[in-house]
Length: 507
Image (cartoon, rainbow, N blue to C red):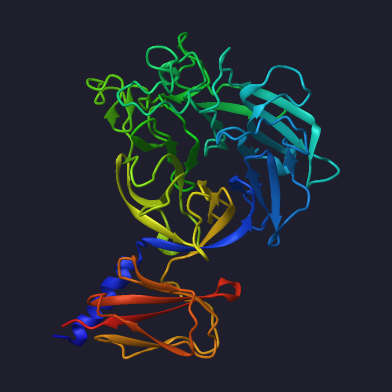
């Protein structure tokens, strides 16, 4: 029986559930070729410039809803032409960041595959370089001012895979650098037989005499040699390299820091079956071992039994199987912006090949106890399966979040229940509550691209595209069940959104 109490309770429960969204709405900010990262140059929130690093060796300036004509940095074709960018998804520019004192010293850093700017030396699978901003043109790098900090040498027989790596400054002011194990994709055989990393008995990830398969921690000094932080875990160990901060990784393509807690989230791409997300809190002991090639995700890999996961190996906070079209984690970022309050504190994770039922996840928790559930990002026109891979999330100096794909950069704008802009004749629905047919009146503004209905858990339960609608149209709600629902209309003009709620009556 319907009562006013039940109606009020339903709206209250819906509002509580909506505080933990299962989806957000994003806008396509700019189309680019393989953008892999986005960031601000400073922490000044009045600085609205964004810098977008692309896999082909270019870093673009985005300002005032458009790109500058000339890249800020170009180490690829048409620029320095020192970046090895080929068909392999891991060849090219892999990491870019600014010095914390960029506004004073003009220093930025980049990791890439290729040669030195002066043409000397062999091609190396990953280099860490420092460049300086031009003194005469702040929109350009001065290519004559550079310094090579690190080379990741794979020896006489380098493989094209697992060069990856992000570079970022942590809350402690030190630079963190991730690098893959120097292996390849492998043949897909389980139990250590995939041959993706044939370096030694247990691979480069477990070898403390190589930078490969590690996260490094150094103190960068711009165009001068780096130094080693005194509290790095292996500075007093003659059997290990001083730069190593964490090890046992296969291909840590992306990592991020929670700007509020300092927690570090490391995405490690799996070999045969499992993708994993690892977490390191700032108050934990350094020198953690994440298991590869002994483990893949939470499971023994080589050996298939008895890898001692209860010993000194750190298990991931989240892992998922290579099924339903999934193939490689690109990690995630914790949302700390102000535009989507319901998303605050949640880690959003993506997969490179997420095309089918699950493309993204939202994670919540603390320490080593985290829960994950599927998450949806709605974009105008949808993503392009098999042509639009996810490269990773990023954030600006305000904590707002962006998704980089192989075709574009998207900005996460709002949750599906956000109130949209005022349009001619706001949406009216009747009868409300309804038992069957809901009539929708959109007023005079009928240039509609899509109509969506979301349930109280934030799941999209109904949608229609390519509509040729007049002022009013009907929705048959009989298949939705009882509850509170959100109706959202996406208009073609500037991708404007308008939202209202309705109720399917409770018997």
